[in-house]
Figure 1: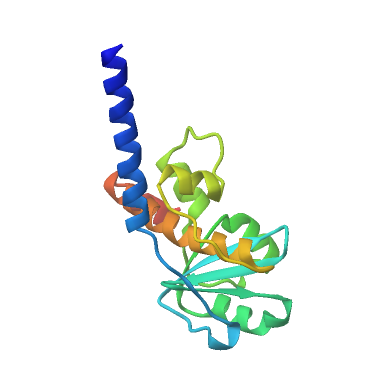
Figure 2: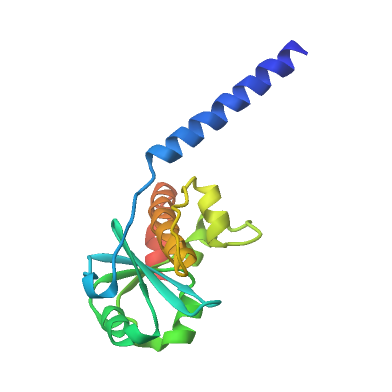
Length: 173
């Protein structure tokens, strides 16, 4: 019984450390409108099939592009900035192959990092890699949250693939 109590206490301590560590690593994102959007060196792009919105995280800002922002979104997609996209296969189906400079596919990276996983959803990946979710309000909240999650997941996946010497393999694919 005493051993069981010690193991339970160790487990609780480990969980607390993970939660504290995750909170320390959280990135606070500022929501910016498309008129204030600035192209960065790397953009993390999330397309929400359900709502048809595209959300983009650039470092510490996140922006939602709606149908009326099509020209701005097209300019971003055709720009030379590097793009990290969640599930580029579905993204290309929606936006065609005019998207330039895609350097990272989150779904493919997740498969390389853990080929035996049962699914590669953003929610599962954020839990696996300890990426805390940011909360956003309003109609665009889910798209904003997913773009912010995508940024954190991509950072963690890049680190994991680099440690396992698979980052070059991802780039070659």
